[in-house]
Image: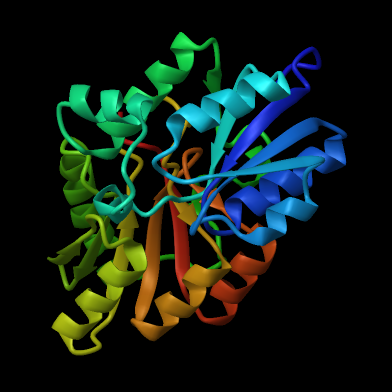
Length: 275
């Protein structure tokens, strides 16, 4: 982000991503406005920004009004919003209703892409969601110390083919592989629930998690994330290896997370993204 554009808004979803982004913005001395999504973002965001507003997932018009009022022409999207929220009982305002009406499907790309177009009509530009956290993007090669076993490598090779194919449908980012069999694919339930389902299906056998990045050239939204909360689920489900796309996956609380993976003998490996 350029020195000339120090005022911007961060739209905060759930998880550690928006917390870390706001902390970094404060370290930089940026004039940042936090906009929390109700029932998603942590109340902690209120103490990390000079100004904080709250919206529901249905209030696109309110989001636009806040940006105008605060003089923010740039908006960063940080954190997850559960995709099942599209089935919320909240009635969309007229701006979001227009996006939903025009959307070809209710996939992430279609819905958020439509929101970005609506924001652009109001001269609000959505910027790289990882702009404040570039050091936390995964690199290439073994990241947690241990290399993959030959069995894990075989699972990763197969899983990356599955993830690449899955990316074309924009339904999820992850696949759980066991002994060169695809046990589960991620959809709206999220990675943790998908891994627990895979563990139940395989009776506790060793799993490999493959996370893709949908061959996107941008990092505006829905960036794959692995963090401290992920470690407990990986241990619980006997997931011994994780393959991620280098440069397109955020490793939140990176040093501590990789330290925990090292202690648990979980191999985390970064691969060049599929183009």
